[in-house]
Every structure is written in C-alpha cells, then in structure tokens.
Image 1 (cartoon, rainbow, N blue to C red):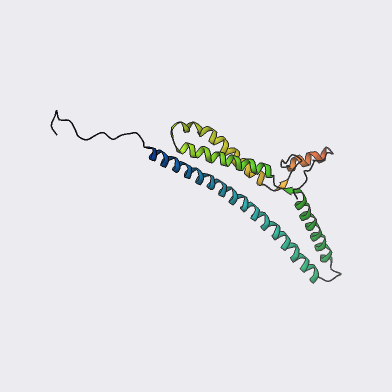
Image 2: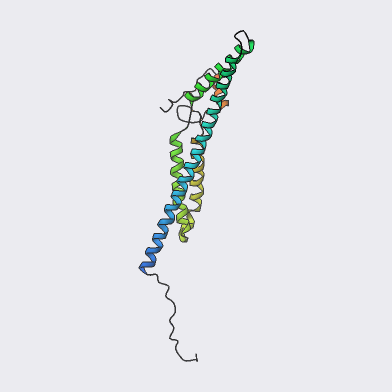
Length: 189
C-alpha cells in the first residue's frame, strides 16, 4: 500500500449486536443456574453425610447392645458378670433414649445458611461478569462465612435450649451447680 492511498479495510466495530448481548445474557443465566445448583447440591451432600454418619453411630450402638444381650443370654443365671452386663445394657439403652429425646438439629439455622449460600452464588456469578461487580467481593466473603457457619452449626445434632442454641457442657454444668435448669425446646416430631 502506498502512502496517500486510503485503505479499503475498515476498523473492526466494537459495538455489540443485540444477538451478542442476548447470547451473553443467556450465558450469564446458565452460569448463575449452575452456580446455584452447585451450592444446593454441595449443601445437600454435606447434610446427607452428617445424617448418614449419625445413623451409622446410632446403628453401631444398637448392634453393640444386641450383642451384649446375646452374651447375657449365654451366661448362667447365677453369674455375677450377667448382672453387671445387664446393668451396662440398661444404662446404654437409657442413654440412647435420652439422646433421641433431647438431641436435635436446628432447621431454622440450616435454612438461613442455605439462603446465604444462594446469595453467595448470586454474588459470585455477578463477580464473574467483571466490571463494577468486583465491589461485591467483600459482601461475598461475609455471606459465604454466614452460609458456612449457619449450615454447620445448625447441622450439629446436640442438646439445644429453648431458642435453638447448642447447650455446652460448661453451661449445663454451671446451671446444675446454680440449681437452675436449662429450658429445653420441644423436639421436632
């Protein structure tokens, strides 16, 4: 090309067509849906794992009690070990009944944790778009922290007070020394 001649080539246009914008929006919605689905599936797998682990522990305790009862049946009536083993079985059954009646999860806290997981997924999808969405990094850290705390704390099966908070051994011991009782919430039926 010689100087002075005008180029017949045009500079590429930076303007996006409506089709490109629509395709970009569709990709964003797909990414958002996949992010939310990933968060929900992760939460369900975690809670399901906790449930299965708890069932495994409870089933193991039941099997141990049944084995002990088989041993009791094999021992002679006059055996001292028989009466001691029966006392242990009785105590284990009473502890199992007490645990089933008082230990529970807090569904409200789990629901709040899952809500914050979904909010975190929305913020993460927005951040992935770039631009001014980078300002959402700080709220993302807070919502992800609340999501993690809520789902973990609510998923722990333990003794809870009337407000649904976990009762620590120290709080229970302190209340017993003071002659107070910790108000129990009614277990979910």
